[in-house]
Length: 168
Image (cartoon, rainbow, N blue to C red; front, side):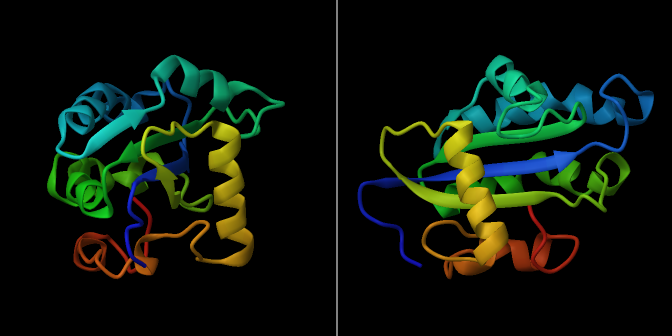
């Protein structure tokens, strides 16, 4: 898949914590969120991230797109390219948190991840993101929604992920 001209890359990353947000077993994760998000926001190629208050409302709304799971931990962001997102995920402090995901996330629920192209300047809504995610889940990778393996230029996930094809 080629990067379409005039487009940026959107990503939705969903996970369910094993424990409540205030449980000491996820303290390192919770305490690291500002650090990881701050590094993302200063990273080359970062464009936009849904702010914390909006994300919290989206995650906790029982009638919303995400189902209101109080242990949901997610990000919705936009990057200039696959390469810039890939660098952030695998070559920054984010990787240290990724490597500890089994401590914090319900791996039965599995981390789940979707990417798609958006016109430059577009900020996806959670409704849009969940539509893309559900399409990927139901139909597999396509130009509409995809994972790392669909993007030929992406390769770090193959060597740096804990298991082949796992999400960020």
